[in-house]
Amino acid sequence: MQAAKTTENRSCWTNGYWLDHCEEFSVEGPVGKLGYVAAVDPTHEELVVIGDHAVTRVPFRQIDFIDAPEERIVLDTGRDRIANPKVKR
Image 1 (cartoon, rainbow, N blue to C red):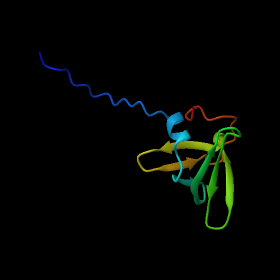
Image 2 (image 1 turned 60 degrees about the vertical axis):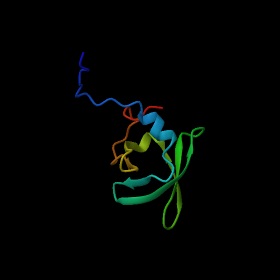
Image 3 (image 1 turned 180 degrees about the vertical axis):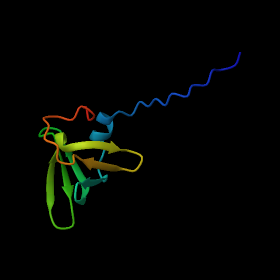
């Protein structure tokens, strides 16, 4: 019996997993690179990002998407929304 091949790309690594494990990912905002994730603060639902000139706290709701293979987080481009359904914990 031959095993069937599937073309569907499934992964057990969800956005919630990557959000909890994104230390050292680069963070990009609408105006360019903000810095790197130094810590994830699940209590306050925010990332602690270290840049060239400052430390910034970024609320999870500002994350537009997480690009895990590139170790990169892209922040919302300015749309005002309560929570991003693409980034679930």
